[in-house]
Image (cartoon, rainbow, N blue to C red; front, side):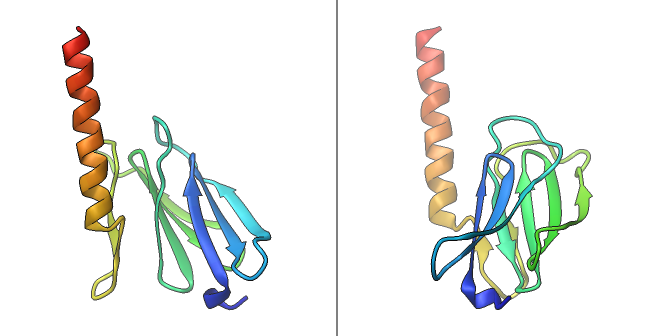
Length: 115
């Protein structure tokens, strides 16, 4: 499978590979562990998919979605995590992170005002 023909999606503690040509699901993997809503940050190096969700980091095989390893990252906490490969792009991008932080702060302000 050519990596250039794959679209990756992370949602609700799942990672899926979708064929860019026709939208067909090639594989789907539930990533273990974590807590909360399951926002998944994903990044690929063309051979592996790195997925972070709610305190846990996972590595999947890009060709078949098989879980290669997991790390619960003890002591790092939970929340949205960013991933980067040295010299390449990061995920999520800084604009997305800023929007997520602003939404989280607005939600906390609304909860405090209601209390």
